[in-house]
Image (cartoon, rainbow, N blue to C red):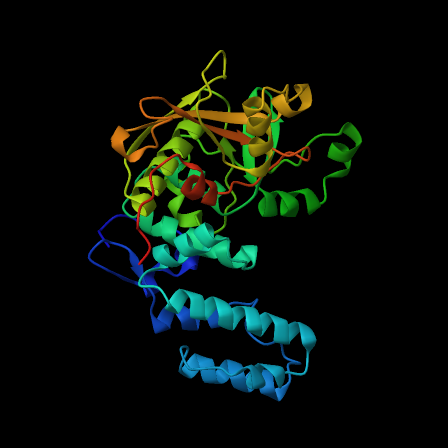
Length: 337
C-alpha cells in the first residue's frame, strides 16, 4: 500500500495480504469480516445451532464444518445460506490468491450468489486501482460490481448507482414539485472536476452519478478500468479507445460487456438487423487492440476487438467483467494458481 488516498474501505482490502505479484492473499481477518456482514450474521431469533456455528467460525474461520452441523440449524433458509457461505469460504481458501479464485469461477462457470461474486470483484478492483488518483476512473470502476440506472439529464447520459437511485426516488417530493412534475431539489450529484476531490470521502456511499455521454470523460475512464483489469488478471497489455459508432467496421471479434450488448453483438455477427430498439440501447463502444499480437488467436491477429455496452429496456446497466476473461480472443494462458 502506498501513501495515496484510501477508498472503498467497505470491501475489506486492508485485511488482506499481497504476494510477490501484488495479488491478494486470503487471511483469517478477511474471513472474520465476511462473517460479520449483515447478510451472514445470525439474526436475533436464530437457533442455538446457528449462533454456535457462527461463534465458532469467528474464533477459527477456517475450521472444518461438517454437513451434520449445518443440518442442525432449524431454519431452512439459514441452512441454505450457511451451505453457500461454507462453499464460498472453501473455494477462496483453495486458491493461492483471490484473483485465482475469481478466474476459476469464471472459467468453470461455478455457481455462487451474485452478491459474493460482486464483492470479490469489488476487492480485486480495489487492488487493481491501488494508488489511482483519478476519481473518474474510480467511479467508472463501480460499474463492474454495482448495477447502474441510466437516465438523460438534458443532453447528458447519467449513470447512477441503482440502489442509490432507488433510495432517492423513494424520498418524498415537495407538494409544488409533485404538481409541476419536477425532480427533487437534491438530485444525485454528477461527478465533475469541481467536486471530484470529494469522491474519496464518500466512495463507500456510491451516491455520485457518472456522465457516460459519448465522447466524454466517463467512457474514457471506463476504458482505463478495462485496460487495468485485463492487465492484472490476464497479464496481457491492451490499448482501448472509445468510438462513437460501428460504421462499416469489420467485426472480426466482439465482446459484449453485458447481456444486452451480447445479444446486440450476436445479431451483427450473424448478419441480422438488431432493430432500432436494441440499437438505441447501445451506450458504449470500445476498440481494443493487443500490444503483443502473438497472444491473440490467428483469426484476429492484427485486427481490433470491439467491446459493446448496452442498457436493458428498463434502462439498467449491469456489466459482466467476467466476459472480458472468457470472451477475448487470446491463446490459452495458465494464470490460475
